[in-house]
Length: 149
Length: 149
DNA sequence: TTACCTGCAAAGGGTTTGCACTTTG
DNA sequence: CAAAGTGCAAACCCTTTGCAGGTAA
Image (cartoon, rainbow over all chains, first blue to last red; front, side, top):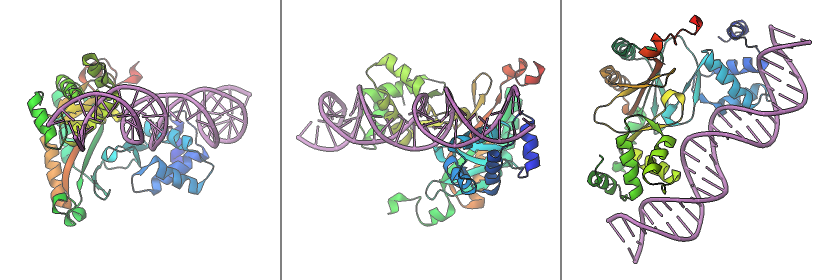
């Protein structure tokens, strides 16, 4: 979803236009494997085109979210982080000591969704599964045992 | 955790005091089965004691969260909602059409956490699993098929 | 008595919006 | 050309904080 053509198509489908600004935002999203917040994205966007404003970034992210091109996460109870949508569903673990994010897949989550859908008759369209704790490195350094200091 | 005594004990354990305000907040939390945001809690708190301020409510929620008496959730990408901690872990489904929240348990989630911990060597301390979509009622009313209108 | 806690009002920080101008299709 | 999009600055909203006066233990 980096190329101009498919982005153009995705937007046109909702009566939206492809602008220079939206192309830049999508490019930045596609290039960032990390999960960036609006500010971090803004820095990268401005590196490409300093004339693009923060409001436009927010408006663009909101639109991309609506048409399913990006997802927003609330990592570690903080403010929103954004990520370009990928093929395989995946989830996040965040280390509360060092901030590292581990992406992982969990087929059990899909099972749980199927169970609930069957039991309650609901139709699930969005799922968030987010873990936090200590990563292996920080545990090794004893950061999970504050008493040991 | 409604009674004065155990709340007092829980607070004392962290060098905190039991005040009139904290007792009222805990009472409101314990009485609300729903998941209320700070404002909704504030209304109920004020119904009991109009002199309690919003800042105190926030400070109290923050303290209760720290000592593990309440949990905060980000339902439907909105702002924080609070809930008194219960015995059995449970998760939430929110209907995007009518706002109804269904609580459910999902043992698979615990499996997924075990898997990740084993695979990555992490220690999970917090887990959020949140689903959204259409509830059975709203599906019946065709709200999941906007095209059908 | 002395930390700790409170209410108030003001500040904070991320996000949204009104407006006049520009640009896409 | 009409409708949609943009930059700017101000507004918004939820939440946090400084402070001077209370209050639990």
